[in-house]
Image (cartoon, rainbow, N blue to C red; front, side, top):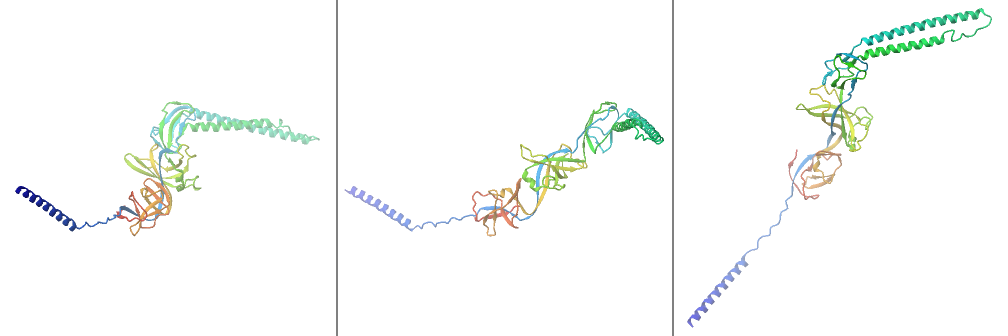
Length: 391
């Protein structure tokens, strides 16, 4: 009985302690304040800007091509004979001046031919003069007989006054004179002279060699000018003056030709002189010809066959803006940041795009701040922060 009473007291004590703990825990929970609710702060995106304005801009069209000579003929012998002189400049890579003697064929046979032709002229002149005098004498006799007779004899016959013989000797004289001109021309052709200032590509003649008429002497090219055929898009022609195609003037747009040669980057001034005959059927590109005068006046020269880049300087836009191509969106929209720090979608007119740039015409107002950062989420009127100005 005593044990049971003790157990009862122990159970009652445990229940009392549990109730006190539960009451204390409830009181603590009721006394704890709820945490303060934090309001989320919206952070404006950071963007980079480029400050632009409007100014005169020259439009340039870029292209490339290979340098070719304006003339590259094959020199050939116009008369046959043995070669008695070859210029020391008539070697591959040699240079020469206009009218310089490049090669000479033995002239003795051609001097003799000229002498014989001149003799034929003198003989024909003598025969013609003698026949004319005989004809004049025959006409005088005919007129005297006509006066002594009571009846008129009329005009003398053509045979009597030697008209057929005069015509024959006149033709013989003209033929002999033509032979003299031919003999002189053949004698002149024994000397082969340079048709222009130029250089030798290859030569095919040696001293003492017998050359047949038409035999190849050398291949040469003119150094008075060089040309580059540049193919461009047809819409680029609107910016250029191409004589005979986009302008009646003979003065085409200027151009700058650049090339890497002998370890150096060199440039030459040129000009558009004409367009090629037709549009390329496969590429639909239009060919224009850029000419550079005196390409061999500098060292290193603008060598024939060199691959070059060409910048053709076109028309000037009075008020235009040049911006990065990446700043364009949907083809003709830019993002501008206003004085209030808000981004605005602004529609522009794109005159042309090339490389990494776009040309706007008309341009943007002075001090315009164009966003060059590409944002994933963007809206018209959103607030932005700027990190500085790009150069």
